[in-house]
Length: 91
Image 1 (cartoon, rainbow, N blue to C red):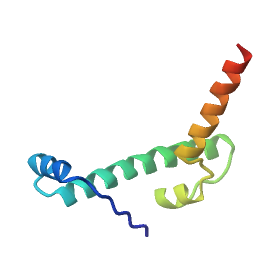
Image 2: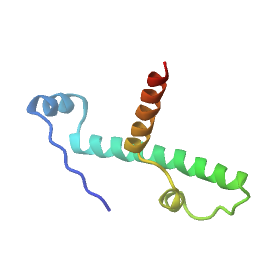
Image 3: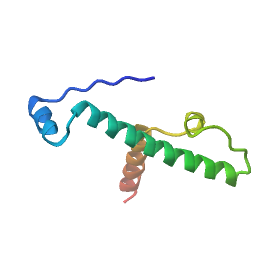
Image 4: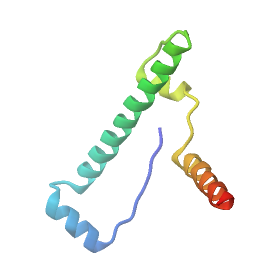
C-alpha cells in the first residue's frame, strides 16, 4: 500500500471547505475514483489485447493491472516529446 501526503495553502483549504463537507474525504473520494477509472481502462485494454492474441485472461482487475506491461504517464510524455522534436527537426 502507498501513502501520499500533500500540502495546500490556507486559502486552498478554506476554498475546499466551502465546497466539501470534509476536505480529507473529498480528496480520498477523488483519488479513489480516478484510480478506479484508470484500473477499469487498463484492465479492459489488457483483456482486449490478450483476447486478440488468443491468450488466457484470468485474475481480478487489480491483478490484471499489476501484471500489465504499461508505461507511466511520465514515460509516455517523454516519448511524445521526443516524437514532436523529431518531427520538428525534419521540417
